[in-house]
Structure formats: structure tokens, C-alpha cells
Length: 494
Image: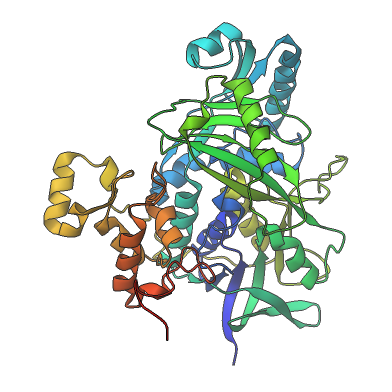
């Protein structure tokens, strides 16, 4: 007999996690399935962590509407879910007089999209705000509503809050096909069995095209991964306090230089359309491209201070906009299709997808209501996700009190980021347990400093093994196929 749910969400990125959290507010059962060993391992895991103001998307597009609506939701969202978020504002920087007209274009677009708090600054004003900026700066568009966040923290917080409110999250669970009754979806097939439902929400990111094709809709819709590569700088050696965009091109927002909530400077991304949806490799040519682009904004950047590189893939789709009269072929798809019942279809959610995620989740709820769903708020719905201790940011007095309650918070495991054993153990036993090294890394930020995990990794593996009751040989970096250890030291095979 099928295990049945009211709503099944496919994909545990930021959009899927937000949708699960929004649906968990209402009566009805929710299941989120994610094919990886943790949530936030796809497009949501490798981006620039920017909450965009909304001046970049084409006016009238679904993308523009979701961007601006989503941006306005972040203060309340951060307050409820207890993740860090700062409205630092952002700059689009013109270098040379020839780039100045682009700022006016963006200002006009922003006003059409309803973006508040924008102004154009002179080159002198930009130099006063960011002393390291290219001295040839001619001006900048300043958008006060831009912000920075931690995408891992955001996604995890939303998914945990969904679990707090009764949702179920199944990891290592890959969608394979729909179960149909005529033209109605009544369930899904996965590698871990079949599950019945009344509604499926397709938020499969890079694979959302393949999911909708299984339902027999939008056969022409194709997602091509758009790879973006990045450099990360040691915060002790390279300090940028602002979010600095170049003027955009037809490839996207361009290669930016930005601060982060963790005080590192990062630069990137480029934008190369590729075929392989799993190719997250960095390339010599790509890294050179982002280095050249970053130096255009901050010429004093020094490669000696780079501590990491990474690449992410954005789901670049060819979906036409649903806005009448607007000719645009890379818009978000957010719909309940007519040809199949029981599906909310989301596709092509690339940048600014992180910013848009809460608005997309609300749009899903509104579409379900329009389709006749009688959504009733749970009497015991809890919107607040409690904050767990963050040793690095606590006062000495608060640290002392915490250690008195649990001595494990007095044992520092990651020296670069000041992460303690107590924090690691708390994440292993959290509402969505962290069971791999990278899952711990995403939640605590250990292993992201200058040594890149060189000192903490063996100790974290042992802590995971102890808490999970398994052999250290079973602990992986990020799931199946990423084993750390093969055998005990000095063990000789016969």
C-alpha cells in the first residue's frame, strides 16, 4: 500500500525548501525528496550569496516580479528563521565614461520593476565609499535594498522549520517517474519506493526540465547548465566591505567582487553554458576570465591571498515568459499546467532565484488556492526556528556559561573558524541531521578558513562516527562515492 502525502516537493534547494516551509503552515502532509545526501547541494550551494534588489531582470517578466517581491520578504524571513542577513546595499560600477549610460538603463529598469532606494553616484562618491575601487571609476548605481546572506543557512533553516511543522525530508531519494491515473498525477516513483500524493511540486533545479517531461508537458523546454567559477580570499589578507557589480552584459550580471557574511571576499562568476549537469570543475581559462574581470573593479587584488576556488551551475532555461506582449525567452516557469492535473511546475529558476525563493513559495500557495485547495492554517504552526549557539560570535561571558552547561563547547575543532565540538554534535542531531563532512561544513562553516579543513577533518570524521554509531570508514565527504578512509593505518591486506 502506498504511503500517501498531500504534497510532495521534488528538490531540496532553496526554492524547494521554501515551498516545503510555506506548505507546512497549513493542514496536510508534506514530503520533500532530495536525491543527494543533504539539502542545498545543487545550484543553491554555489552562488554569490547576494539578495538582489531587482533592477536587473527585464521589466514585466515573472523573474522581475519574483525578484522584487522576494527581496521585500527577507527581513521578516531572517527574523523568523534566525539566519544571518544584512542589507548592505550594492553597487553597479561603471569604469570609464563609456559605461555610464548603462547605469541609466538599469535605473529605468529598476523603477519599472518597483525597486526603491536607488541613486546614481559620481566616481568621487564611489571612491570615497570603497577606497580600493579602480581609480577610473566614473560612477555607480547604488541600490540600498541589496543584501548578503548565507545560502546554506537560509536553505537549511527553511527546511528545518518545515520539519518542525510536520513535514518529512527524505535524503538520498531520487525521483524517477510519476504515477498517473489518466491525466492526473497520484504519486511518484523513487529509488526508495513509491509515494502517493494529491500534488507534486517540481522544484528540481537543473533537472526540472526532465521532471516536467516525465509528466508529458513542455517537451520544448530545456535547461542548459550555466557554469560560474569563483575565487575565495582569506579574510585576514583581503578585505572588501561592499558588493560591487560591473555593468551587466548579455551573459548576465557579470564578474563581481563582494564581501560575505563570513567576512571573506569572493570574486566571480563567469557564465559558460555547458552540457553536463554534473560538471562543477574549475578551468584554467575560466579562472583567468574571472580574475581579469575582478581586477577591472579592484586592481589591488592579490592571488597570493586566494584560499579556495569553486564552481556552481545555474539552471539556464529557454522558457518564454507568461506575460502577454513581452518577448522574453529565459523567464521563470511558475504554473499549474492544463494538460496534467496535480502538478505545480517550477523551471528555469536561475539568478535571482535565491532572492526570489520566498516569493515563489508564496506563489505556489496562491496557485494551489486558485486551483481549489482549501488551505487552513494549523493551530500549532510555529514560524520561528530556534537559533543554535554560534561560538565564534558569542561574548566571552556567554561562552563561559555555555561551556558550563556542556563542556563540548569548550573544545575547538576548527581553529580557523572557531567551531567547537558542541556545535558539530548539535548539527548531527538537528531536525535534519548532518551526516557527512560537507553537511557539517555547510551548517557551521568549519573547514572554510585558511587551512581548508586540513586540521579539523580527522577529528570531525571521528565525531561523526561516534555520534552516528558507525565506523569512521563509513563517513563520507558528501555522500556515496566520496569516502575519506579505506582502511585503518598500517593494516596490511593478506
